[in-house]
Image (cartoon, rainbow, N blue to C red; front, side):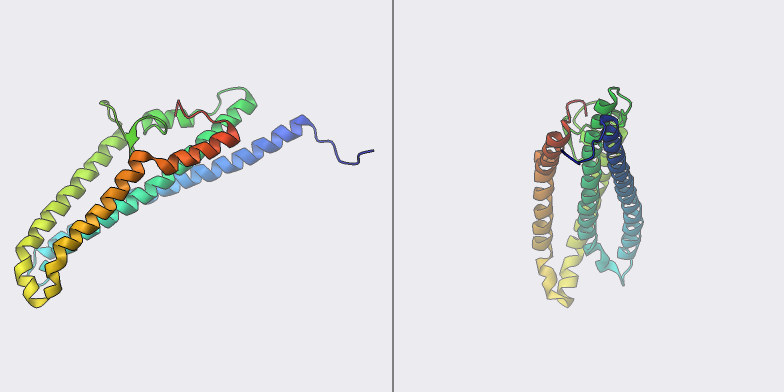
Length: 221
């Protein structure tokens, strides 16, 4: 005769719900944290960029202009890294919310659907948080805004570096390799970021894992 305790279906459902809610709280906290880090980084970067620009206009610190393109590239890559955690949290939270809805047999959790429409879709066409559509979301607009600002800062700083290069190279000959290094560094990061966000290879891997575990449908997200 079996001595194993018999667990009722209601207890199992309640336990599943508790576990799912704990995971959902964790993902929502992650989403908030990395969204906050993303925008804090942008604000601090703008402040530092203004200070570096002001420094580059002085005679003593004019070489600061050479650092600006590398700084902007770093900020772009770091902000993209924060964005990947925002996407990760949304992918997982979507799976959890859909699983909870099925357990409750009601669409009580719709945050993932609102986020897909208001921010950017997880499954639909988008690139680095920018939906590929005419009626652009505000997060898409501000992302494009920062892209243009970053590209402009790199171009203007590179032009200033080109003006300063002959004089600086006499004092520091290795400066002659500045533009080859800048071009190589820029292409390295640009190629990887385009590959990462265009193919969305890692995002889709996580989606498959969540779908296998929770039966998630990302078509509406």
